[in-house]
Image (cartoon, rainbow over all chains, first blue to last red; front, side):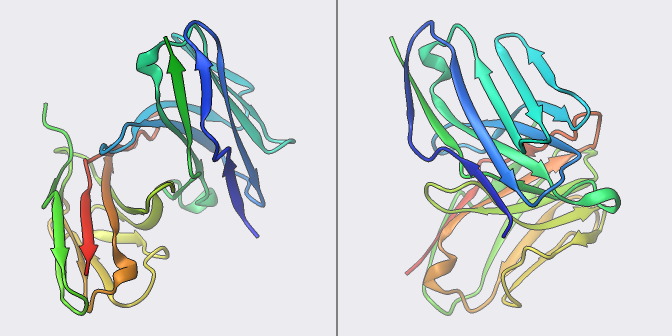
Length: 115
Length: 114
């Protein structure tokens, strides 16, 4: 069956450390993958997109990798801050070549950054 | 500028009733999405509009769910004969496409079916 898996256990790290979150998928061949941040009671907020032909993408303290062989994306936050505490969601484009706008989300991983 | 808005923010209804949930997308965004999110889960795709037409409604769970976007802007998600299992947060997102196909989400409508 098709799955998008994110670690359901919360990730607790100390301020200043690098947080690494994982998104694994099976039986999809996404053209690209997005990462979103969601705070309690709010809608998700877009962070980064990475395409299938890109190995790595960076934006400020964020870094995303995409390994289509392993079917895995890693999301890194360097020099983490308590304000980074939130749930992080990955979203896969599953529409194929004729529907570029259909996305399936993982269940998200909650990140807690402690001061 | 104004983001995506959704009304009502909370809706409590009784089993068997009909509900309508409204989404006002960002002006000019041609793509509009509806998702459903249960506690501890990610958003679950329901339907995607491109302009006025539903480009993909494969995520609607059954024929009690229906969505419209008659003028290519505001969208309404309609749920008939609500069931307790319909209780969730219903999220709307809009997008202009763009290089990252970024979706802008509204705050959601929390639906509770008693």
